[in-house]
Length: 434
Image 1 (tube, rainbow, N blue to C red):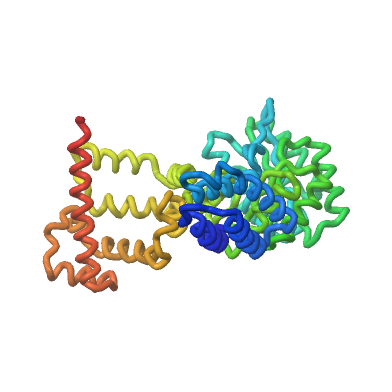
Image 2: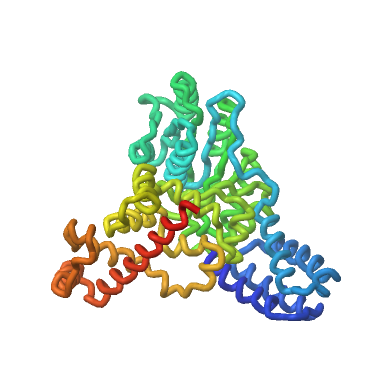
């Protein structure tokens, strides 16, 4: 997410950081480079112009030019203005109904990822203790209802399909009655998309809005479409008065222009971003955290959220007992930890969420295949060998190398690293009474 934009922007800001003293010509030249980076990222021209105007006014102030660390001051100004650009104080949370259920209507063009986003959002809300009901209101796209039913089964949540011959308004109305009778706290409406914005489509969505009075109308927009996503957002906002946006496919080749332009053009906040295909791959779009990611400052809150979603609580409790209690940390525990980390998402994404690490670590050092290789090596061991790695002599290591398809040197390196890890675990236990 924002990889190319982050890299180029960091390159420009690095020149500011290296300066012990800044002059007005230096600031203007640097901001011209920032302008070029933003336009290359497909950020709206008017949004870019206003952004740089605000940054320049603050950057050319006496406080910055005479500052002990003017470069860091300018980085902070750019960060603060990015936060404003992404929504600032605009509410990025769900607006809850005073009396449940809260109705959330998802709208957008065909192929934007609406149905998948509905299931992802439902799962996210379920993790927060809500009880969602999904409603299949897309009666036009072939197999759209079946797709939502399948996704509902994946996230273990109910889906209301409606009866034969029902229209969209009938399904939405009956789904609301079902949600009330079964005390569901949230009702998510997966509405139909079109290949382009048209009046019949908008009239249908308006009728659903008038009938159900949803608390949230979220546009699901494909970030890969760049500036077109902004135009689509404008069209839907004029017709329905959107409450926010879900940007999908942010893990792909999206240049970031849509994310940085939508709020500036429409005034509507980005509430969630899709960062992968898994049902857990939907992150909240807090402006402060997104700005931190763009400037490669990390996102600790996002990392913790992913950990909470991926970690099995029982497994975690057993692991803590091993680390902090009297148990012994074994290769089986290490394998369990490895699998939990893999469930959190691609390793290269996780590294970027750690402050100060993602920007410094070369891309080649973050190889997701290495985790699979480690898993293969451990799985090639017998249960006894995993519990007591000290019994692994030369012949056993050669057998494990053949079984995993990895060199003996790699097996030796893993065992050495694991031994160091065990020492750290013992040190942690030693500090616990203190």
